[in-house]
Every structure is written in structure tokens, then in C-alpha cells.
Amino acid sequence: MTVSFAEYQDTSVVDPLRQGDVLEAADPAASLWQRHLVVLTADCDLARAKHHGRVTCVPVLTEHEYLLEMQIPAFATRP
Image 1: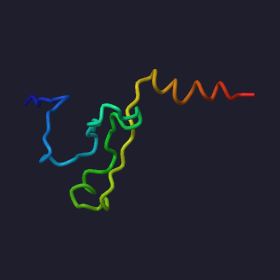
Image 2: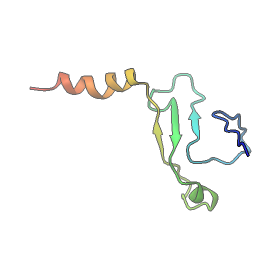
Image 3: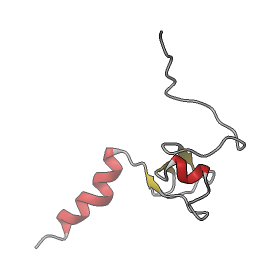
Image 4: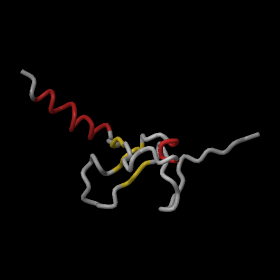
């Protein structure tokens, strides 16, 4: 039996939020820390409403953005 795997799936506002979903900011002026977010909150917590209205996410950065924001400033402040 062959199982098909879709790397991308369109969703709507009626679909439940799931762990691993990528959220995209609606505001084109969103910062790189808010532009794309990956949901980390567990599916079971979302399904049973155990997240108290909060969803844990991490930003998605390109390697270039990460280096410019996190690594290069650290080198600049070294003694």
C-alpha cells in the first residue's frame, strides 16, 4: 500500500490549528520575527484546549537573516 504525503496543504480558517503549522503574517510590514511562525504547541493541548488561549511558536528565518540578526552583532561586540 502506497501512502501519499503532501508537503503543502491549503487550509482555511475553519481548519484546526496543528503542531507544525506555519503561520504567515497578514501585515506586509511585519518584522522578520513575526513574518512566518511554526506552531510548537502540542496537538493534544490544542485539541483539548489545554493551552489557555496561548500558542507557542518560533520564527522562521533564512540563514542569511539568522546570521545578520544573531551572529554578526555578537562578533561586533567582542573585545
